[in-house]
Picture (tube, one colour):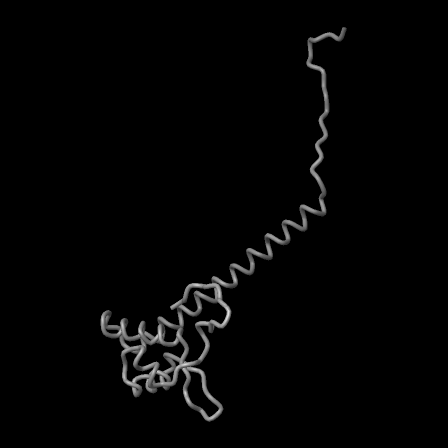
Length: 135
């Protein structure tokens, strides 16, 4: 469940900042707090933790909880299937990030190679055409 990249404004928290206590996250996701605890135990959503062990959910966690609910209720996917979907989407996101890194590295390497070659020079060899005489 990739969230779109957004520019941060001063004072704005990132989407993955663990700020919501479980009761608020449950309300935002339209679920019971006990459901969030179960999803945490199953590894579907992994909230941040306070020093005392309390769960803290981010905006990204809440969006994921909503997606879990949608897959379960609207699509009829069981929790094991949802967990696998989340794992695969996370893997795809990681692969996309790696491809982006490799594209950047390749571009940098091409630019460096071009700068080492210097400006392009061409050598033109003139050859007289047969049958034509010089004057």
